[in-house]
Image (cartoon, rainbow, N blue to C red; front, side, top):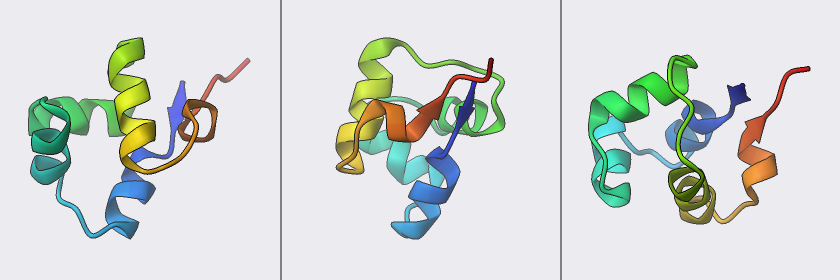
Length: 64
């Protein structure tokens, strides 16, 4: 699954640690999501999308 978390985070001027703290997860979790090594739970995906004021489908993209 491809995602736009890194671009959204950097455009907002946030570090991985700052985004993780805002979402209640570690910096390593944010790093793994951005690198595509970890697919977040539905609750975390919704939290990420809400943090950036967008829909889950605009952040996460399923590759067929």
